[in-house]
Amino acid sequence: MQASLFLIPVTLGDTDHRRVLPEYNREIILQIKHFIVENIRTARRFLKKTEPSIVIDNLVFYELNKHTSAEAVAAYLAPLAEGEAVGVIAAQLRAARRAQQRLCRIAKGQAEALRHLCAAAFCAF
Image 1 (tube, helix red, strand yellow):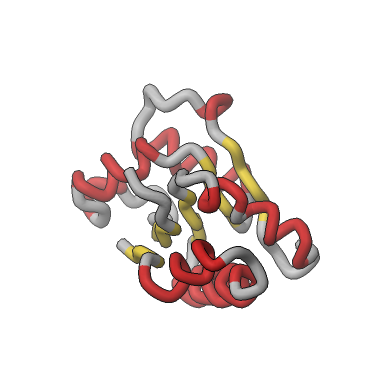
Image 2 (cartoon, one colour):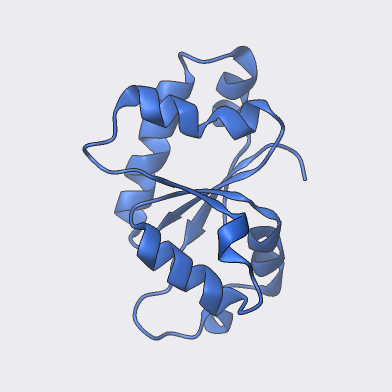
């Protein structure tokens, strides 16, 4: 998988993820090792519901909220520069869009490759 930033919608409540996420999206999620999330606990639960055999301890979670510094957010983007995919998990579309905008705003100050990713390769399921 090439370096991409994926916007991953989270199901609300007890909705079975198979009712709203196509199998292809599940396969993509299983290939991602770095996740930028609003709430780590909620993201971990969502990933376990998506695939019970997933090893949560092999994943890296970065919490993004209004208190997260620009420097921390810039560090969250480092896996992209190394050619790895990163998933942004958010429960509400509005929150996901805010996260996307903030990440891309910060990426503009990063290397050319990250600017290109935000301009052309931000993938929303």
